[in-house]
Length: 543
Image (cartoon, rainbow, N blue to C red; front, side, top):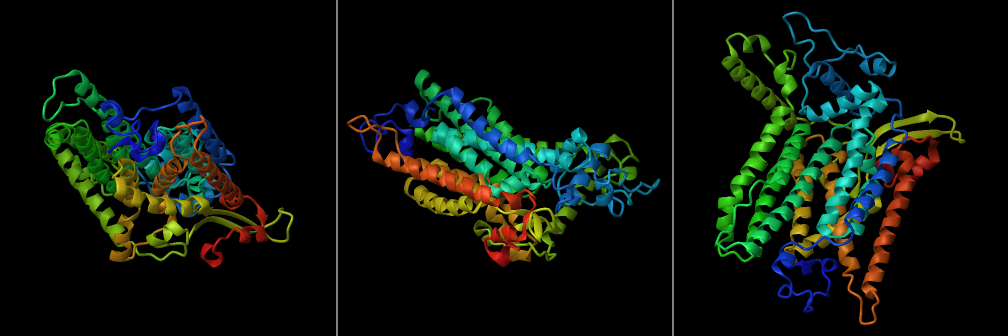
């Protein structure tokens, strides 16, 4: 695939001699250079990240309440850092915690662990991360939301950097980071102790690692091509640390929620396909045989074995203690170390199966549940928190709300960008378009199975892993609109670039205004009821 598929990456117009694949060196064809200042490649994304961090950390401890599913994960996180496993709590534990009492867990009776072992249906990593914030700042709203705010802020930096690498443009990288900083759903989940923001982060981090690995592998391949005797299959590319890092991130994604598995499988296939393409791009006679012999074994280690090991490591608390659900400690320790390992594995597998059957049969109705095909249109947001009887806002009736909803300008713009990206990929087979579409599909389409197979309870915020890839779709289309930087005969930038930059800047401004308008109902700001109602986009569907 020629670099001219994205005209803003080349120094000449598509079709000109300068931008023609025949006129480019093998290195420039296979690895388009990262242009611009390396320093600004970091400063720009860091400034955007700083903005997103300020938005997320200001007022993080408010509302002083247990918001939505924080009732599960805040207590599970606190239990994990104290006992290594989740334990059941006393009645009215939320009220006790908000009152400063952390003695909220049931006592384990001697010889009978059932009263204290909590049956939980998600792996432990996300709750360990929530617990880390509680360990640092205490069992209070700021403490249990701290990790989410950190991870949400870091994800802005990761997206800005990966967008820069994919577009070869620092400006477009900052544009992507800014949109993520201004997305309402990302903002709310970055300020709430739920698991989904952690899932999104590890998925995005894995994707970013694989994009870096793609560049590093191609650099090694081109170095070999330019300096070594040629062979039909090409070289073994050695250790791939960024691929291993991606495997760790994918294992951690699955250790937050099992929905990370879809990304793990898809990203592994995607990475191997990139290896096929790299060997073909340098003109090897047997690119597929070379990839199968020299890249696939590496991929099996980095994207199969490493994720499995990473997943298992997050369960160390359950294996090392006697009070985990279904642990059968007395039985496991009755006949020596070998039997301990065997029986522990059996108990763990049985527990995983129970969790699987739970998710297959989860059909409990909820007023804010929604179907996955409604998510891109934001038809059913989730009211995480609402107080409607407050005073002090200067009106007779006040409202205080945290509404889990995306910024409409960004989400609706992403729909158009994704449609454009489909056409783009069909026409050009550009790897960037294909990667973004694949990642978006893995965050969305698997939920259709649960919707049709068993009408599972689902919510809009399950779509948060899709959001970075929605923004990447917008960013890629923004790059296409802006076009190449090649000046015309008079030394001026082409009109397309001027108009494209104005359109992209206008879109960013609209996203900022839209986020500012929604901010009071995303952050529990006390406002008059009429102002709260004015922000309900689809009226009854948002209430």
